[in-house]
Image (spheres, one colour):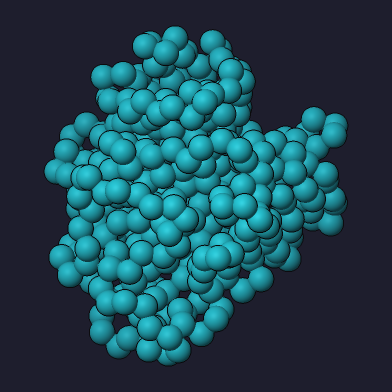
Length: 357
């Protein structure tokens, strides 16, 4: 579930605005009313490659990659690369300083003992960040997610890179698997009240390349996952945060789950089962038993870093545990995100994101 981290005070400062920021509703203000922006409604017909690019009229959007990697000695790592677009006004994108878009980048690396995270901010319209098509290129400063493909699918072959003072990575991502529309044909509902996003994924990437952490280099490879979402108001004011899972099963199947926690009432729970051929089946709360188990103290918070997941209709009964319980994204808008291991009826690996704790 990729509804992310928009602090409106930061946006106002970056935009040079002297108006006070609105009181935030829901996690990171994502429950704030957005009536001037384009609503998310069922029945959208997706179009590729056009939908790999930005969507004018919507308030928030992201290009989000996670990868579960191993080196030649079998040591495990996680990599995250994310670009967020935030529109300050519901108008078409303008060039130069007339742009009403703020861009935010997050990058992180995780091992069993180390977690490093970094962020970048940029104004739109002046070339420091953006997303273009033909060829596909998403960037903020020198962090890039760029197509190397020569055929009709720009996501068939990409380069992914980011760098900060404690880490860097340069990865090649390739896939011949299909894109997957999450939810109801890409309409991904987040609440009983109807808040939603448009949401598709590419869960079949294979990644390989070079990872550097604290001056030590590793040749790595493993599965990767791309999430694409855009919306205008993806949360209710009552939703305090979420727990999101992307799982690569050794069987070749993939699973996406998210639990939207509420200040009052039961969480909103849904997901998708994706078979090895890319056929997707929507999962409802009745299909899923998702239970937090062990916790850890992280950055002064109590975080569930071990979970039980059961999907009886798919004979799935697993436990997932964080590779590094201290995978705290200590950024302007903090949250937990890191790789997880799977055990039980299915082996595998994946990623977990937890916000609002």
